[in-house]
Amino acid sequence: MQVEIWTDINCPFCYLGKKRFNDALAQFADAAAVQVTHRSFELDPTSPLGESGDVVEHIAKKYGRTLEQAAEGERQLGAAANEAGLEYITSGRDGGNSFDMHRLLQWAAGFGRQEEMLDALYLANFADEKPLFGSDDRLVEVAVAAGFDEAAVRDVVADKTRFADDVRRDEAQAQEFGVQGVPFYVFDRKYAVSGAQPVELFTQALNQAWDARPVAPQVLNADGDACGPDGCAVPQA
Amino acid sequence: MQVEIWTDINCPFCYLGKKRFNDALAQFADAAAVQVTHRSFELDPTSPLGESGDVVEHIAKKYGRTLEQAAEGERQLGAAANEAGLEYITSGRDGGNSFDMHRLLQWAAGFGRQEEMLDALYLANFADEKPLFGSDDRLVEVAVAAGFDEAAVRDVVADKTRFADDVRRDEAQAQEFGVQGVPFYVFDRKYAVSGAQPVELFTQALNQAWDARPVAPQVLNADGDACGPDGCAVPQA
Image 1 (cartoon, chains in turn brown, red):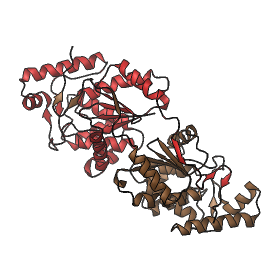
Image 2 (cartoon, rainbow over the protein chains, first blue to last red; image 1 turned 135 degrees about the vertical axis):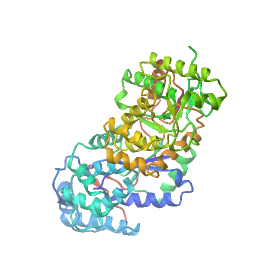
Image 3 (tube, each protein chain N blue to C red; image 1 turned 30 degrees about the vertical axis):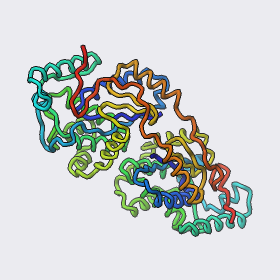
Image 4 (cartoon, each protein chain N blue to C red; image 1 turned 90 degrees about the vertical axis):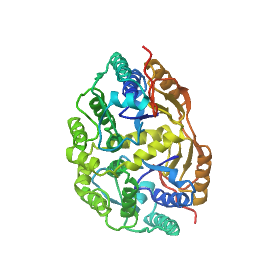
């Protein structure tokens, strides 16, 4: 079974949702047969590259709230994260353009280490006071600390074209699915769950999707020339 | 739309089917929205590593045919390949264990160059008299000639554990789908086509799968805390 999770590094509920989904998956009997892929979604693709901004100030300005209201929002997010067993710094957190991070995630997916990269980025954003956004060097530092090869990471970060098409393909797919916010979970392209649901709801969704999984696709044409363990059929001339 | 094609390098009909499928795809109006992934299938996983054997002799021995019968089979396969516009050497071709080739294909898929790798391997097997199987150096040579980085390829070829799990996962999926032979084409895990069908049949399958493609998955739970372009909902404590 395939689970695709659209996510953004800037998204606290994606960080929280990942923990809750993983908790559900850890208890799921057929977890070994579940393939999870994280898909790219930018909450603010217009956010300028190379810049880092304080999250509380940004939220207050963008949504017309007072600084105290914005700070209270972060504290509530922090409390929810702590309750799920996650670290969360409730002040001094930064935000910014996440395109390069999505490119890194696409790159790491190619050799089976996407989840490690995502965890490193989430922790750097939500649990580390050091700014994360707007600096290629910081991004490289975070990835290298997570065990990725420095030269390879630097190459990907520096060449803004690499894996850019993969990010845009994911975003186009989200648009086709009508995704309005993240996290957004899609099971075998058949069922979807929106938002950081409680663990029990993810468990329900996993069970429902598992029961409905296609055991085998419908064979439209079965009589083509093929090779099997007993050799290749020779075409009839 | 996702198309997965189970294939083996040892499989003449996979080589032929790839050409016919690609011819159908080239004429398909929505080809840009079709994502093709080649999946691993070993026709003979028990074939010993590090060995190369003449295909005609192998077929004659394995299936109890005369050498002339086996050679005639290769000539007929060659004629069908030529008719599809493909080169094919009808004598002197070798075969053997393809596990390392599948690992290379899995590796190349990670950075969007799987098709280039597959084409290089097919041509080396079906259109080049130089033996392909049983030699790490020959495998590196073929990949490097196709434009892949020599050190990176050599690393993958040398470390037999790399991408081995991905190969086995594909093979387990094929088994779950009941695949008896290759090529085997699966469209959005909904429809399947078996064998090197004529171009027109691939066109029909593409159209049928396209019309049935899921525009959006069914949303089971939509009210979870999520972040969107208008900010993150604050959880109700």
